[in-house]
Image 1 (cartoon, rainbow, N blue to C red):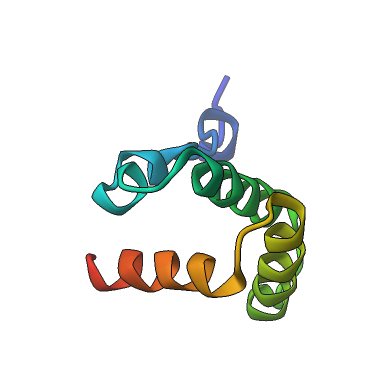
Image 2 (image 1 turned 30 degrees about the vertical axis):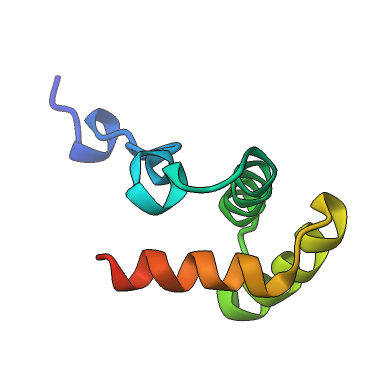
Amino acid sequence: MILNFGEYYSSVTEKDEHKKSKEYIKLSPKMRKAVDDIFRILDTSKGLNILNNFEKTIRDVSKKHKVTEKELLDYFEKEMLSI
């Protein structure tokens, strides 16, 4: 019996890969929870418009975890610059 590649292949997700970065390690526990929440929300969203979802998610998470949007955006900016 011949099997197709799709039957062998399973998606490999790098869950919690962001927790290994230098910038993440520098964050306070409060900010870490907020960043984890953002990644969790974005991972579960299936929409194609990630930028709009990202901005809305930043707003929602900043209110929920009582951190500023600027702090969250600064974190993601530093992450992008460190790549």
